[in-house]
Amino acid sequence: MQRKIVLLGYMGSGKTTIGRKLANELKVPFWDLDEVIGQMYGMSVSYMLVKKGEIFFRECEQKALNVVLQNNSYILASGGGTPCYYNNVDTINSQAVSFYLQCSPSVLTQRLLPEKQNRPLIAEIEDEFLHEFISKHLFERIPFYEKAHHTIDANGDCDSIVKEMLDRLNQNSKVF
Image (cartoon, rainbow, N blue to C red; front, top):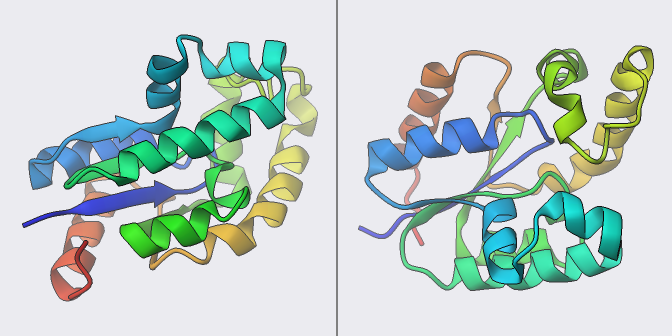
């Protein structure tokens, strides 16, 4: 059976970690969109954002997304902003089953604080302002994330989240 699943959510929501585990359970390939972009364009997302700018990056992101969506079976961890640009969320929903991994700003802050230097969007934000930044930024993106076919509480442990996703997939007749 074909499985085309795209994970949406803010950075730190667990898209990559959960995606790898879900792909292993379903025995399908896993792709992280940022890695696909890096392979297609020969430069990291961080480099693209800093040296080429966000508009260039978002155009590359859209092209990479469309390439991945043409495949038969996969789990794709999208970038945190992927569904918010162009008509990406509608394109995703028309070609795959989408899951919004929903996390609270507090959990996201806890997860992102130790690795903030590796995240271009938040690298320069002082620690004491990170929670406020995430809260505001998440608020702007929620309308796009909420267009996903499924919303999963991703504040908990990875195994429980994957189990809930598998349960939802088994109950849902919508398969791409």
